Length: 347
Ligand SMILES: Cc1ncc(C[n+]2csc(CCOP(=O)(O)OP(=O)(O)O)c2C)c(N)n1
Image 1 (cartoon, rainbow, N blue to C red):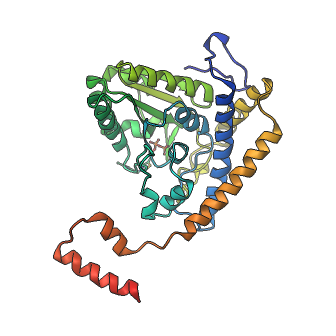
Image 2: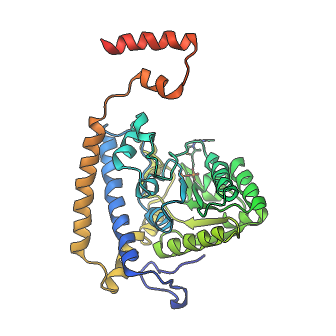
Image 3: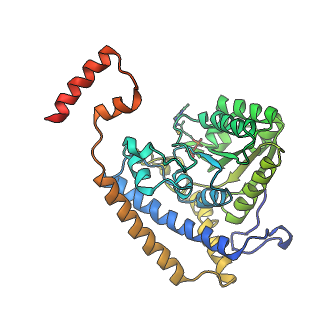
């Protein structure tokens, strides 16, 4: 397992420390702090009934922010339902992420210059799709990569193997990023596979597999940066298994982790926290301070409040909107229903 920063925030082996400039390091921290504030806010908004579907991210910030930060704007992200931070940091406006959570169609109207898809709910479908997107880049000789994210549970799904296999055969510029957060809802990793690791599964597809400390933002950043270089050099895809933990429930829709996880496990993982670790490292280099962090928290709170206001101001979704967006031409039966709804909506 690659680890560059120890849980105490020390560089374990100076030879492994990549050349990352100070501005990039600070930006990594800023985004992680911001994302944790947003996660807390999203959880309370959900509890107040002001947000819809939400899958908490705390604990996984190093995976999400470290990986997205190693990409170029032209690279393409195919997220799963938990990977909202990556697509927002890649350019999707926050208010649209909130609208997506509420099931509003405008949440999924991705701006032209933002290279992301909306989150995949069907477990592992994004793996074959990412393979296809990467194949497209290869055929068009475009210098960009596709990255997709999946959980440990998703690696048991057929699409996972199919996508990896095809990606290996055609050496497509793809990165498959597994956030192994130890649980698939309540199913522990020990019940997920008898394989030694998820990274080992790369071997069967003939692609590179690496296991990294997913609580270490620098290890994540550097691994994705390298995987991207390899992909662009035509050396094929990489499967990255990042060992991490989600502190919260699976989603806000009624999961109670205390029914399947012991408090000791939670405590153990909190000691590896990605923010605590990275903060200690940056402070030791005089690159971070409480004042700076407070400023980020303040900015995050203000921008989140603005984004919610903007989401609230969006016109309510109508049934006829959905039909208009989905169908270029309406069948006679659909037209009849459409007219009926149009009448109701005008009242
Ligand atoms: C094909 C399919 N089967 C089942 C589900 C229901 N489901 C939603 S999330 C989930 C668990 C996924 O766990 P994991 O892949 O470890 O990801 P995590 O949520 O922990 O990030 C399941 C079974 C689904 N969405 N799609």
